[in-house]
Image (cartoon, rainbow, N blue to C red; front, side, top):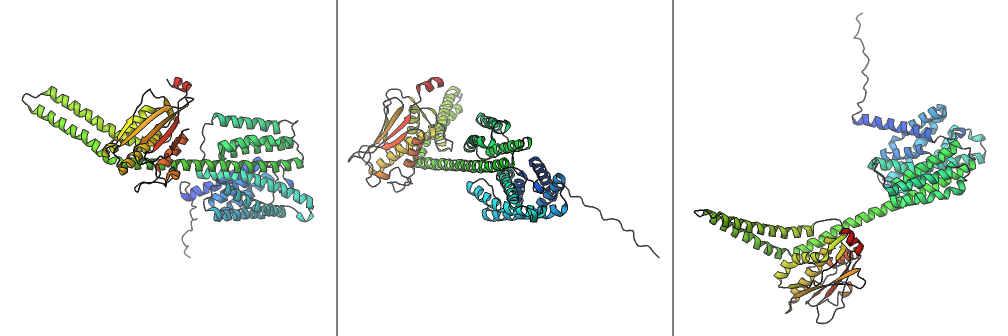
Length: 551
């Protein structure tokens, strides 16, 4: 009888860890190992297999994993829980498996519900998201703990008081771990770990917190419950000044101190339960305050970005108004350059060439190129987008720069700009570009008003004087135009209020806001019949001591 072909075993396929499935396996393995390590780190008291701890970071890790990877990853959480029970508690599989499956499914449902409410990629950074997350977590922790008690203990013979005590301690410990660790790991998944050198303030905050924790938990003579309140000031300080991430790290340090005190010192069970509740209160307070501080900082950054963009829009609009005059101003040096170069070429074409005279013409052409470059530079620097930087500024130079910017527009409408500098002006403490923008806005508005009214005298006068006390300088911009319209005089500084058909109404509102942001003010004199408008700008003067140090 002929033998059939020999059967060889099918090759075993080992996934390549560099591929997507391989990376998924690595993530699963890393989660399981970290889950077991955190469980062992926080393992304090194994009451009937319930694993009561003041702080359960493994549950926070599990919830974060389900939030990030999705509720479908619950079998990985269940596997990690079973392995932790076997390796740490030596729990029979008959009790561990149903307990772990129920534990994973409850938190998977909670994570799935939160993702449906707040989106597939929750960040846990806004106070509203964190508050909702803690409510959902609290609703999930209670049934998960009840299932744990049901599957690993003989609950039929357990006294009601004992059941409530175990339930309370386990629920509070899980909530404390979730409140701290879930936002920490979600943040890490979204932004990664960015370790920066701590500032002196941050180092001082953590040093103070370390001393306070040592006093509360390290000294046997200290009553932990009576002195727990002194932990709140460092946490609040870090929350308001540092934001969410440093606060989470500080709370983790405090949690470790509680675990160390519980492990090394024989604390009564009622004391441990009270510490759990206090720690949960501290964690929720610090996290919500830190999230609020972060949200405020993000709002301030967004407002500052919009402010800078609107400020730049105002500068662009002001620049567009002087563009026609700018073209005329550039035309003169360009024509001079052509004339000098043409004359130089004729001198070189002579026999013999007049090299010296040709070189003089080239130098004159070079001077005109520099003049054109200076004109373009003024416009470029004026329109550029930049952050506000308060520093000592020469006010006289700033006024002359603003005059140079609006001069083409003034010449186009035959308006004279006069500035009697008189005595040397002191330096001001301001942002040069913003100050320049305020002056350009005031003078270009005055030029447009004069051009529309077409009075016999077309003039703008600038006058500066140091106010009483020597701390501020006032700059008045007066024009010979028709003055402020009674219809808009009360709202002249409101956004989008303008008396010109082609105006956009943001120049004066932005100018006042920029003046106030620099510690100054901007207002107008009461209108008088038959007289033009007068706007007054005050800005702080550089203190004498600061002036000396700068010198």
